[in-house]
Length: 380
Ligand code: LLP
Image (cartoon, rainbow, N blue to C red; front, side, top):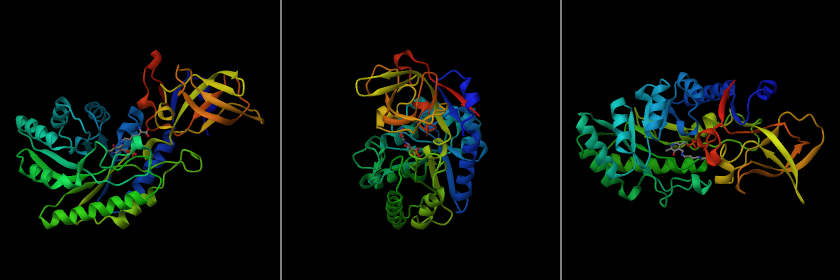
């Protein structure tokens, strides 16, 4: 499946993206979300802002979900209509809010009362109304890694259900705020649908509660979170969008004329990307042998940070024999390890190794640690 000959001639390490798979993924999203009236998908650009990928996502009609001024700028540069950009984040700086106001983005997802007051004041200076959705912390357990769980009351995100009435009242009162919706996101890499069902029932109750007070919302944004198959990327290259959207259709009570927004990141771009690296050395230890790659945790930090595992493939070995290796990077940290006891075809210096399912939160989280270069993109 890899264009090995082409990849072999490129300086490693680099991220390789399969355009065709991205397009098929986007087509599946549009087909499945398109079955339901009022469903709109935004791409959570934090997963990957490669300009070629953003161009394809934009051409497919998705909007985008940003979490910084830098991301808003990237999306504008990639040609996304401001009316399709939403801006979230627990700590928006004034310059970021001003940039988004100047661009006339669709909506700010607001995470606290003090933030609401600052947006109101900055919009007032410009004589503008800011569209706002309030991010609610629904206290739903996403059953995922604790670093990517966001919807529990102990997390820093959103406004608690108990305090929401007060903040809604405030939003309705502020002169430069136009309250259009509620926003939720419970966590990332969810492989079960039950937490999404729970989220729906929380939102249904909330909407009943607010409707009883005469408050209605034009949009409900349920965030992202749909996970991907890191174990068998070839068997499941496209996430189960059918069940994902059908779950919302079954459990979420959409009000007449209301829009339901989704912010999918990982599910859009994860499987189309691999980190391609070259074997520098095969080193024999006392009880182990190590494959030492020219890619490390500075290029792909997920294993070190979240104990994540990316499937490791030697894409050039022609050996029919296998051996067991620890696959590690060159960085001076013991956590710079991509896999222990990996069974690979006999591997030698110069072989190309693919770390699969690295299209989301891979290249974008790369750093210059050890004065290393940020890996390049190759989009084929
Ligand atoms: N919306 C909001 C408000 C979010 O915070 C996130 C992700 C998303 C949407 C997109 O979630 P997704 O569909 O990708 O699950 N770096 C971590 C993932 C962090 C996710 C942060 N928020 C990782 O590599 O697993």
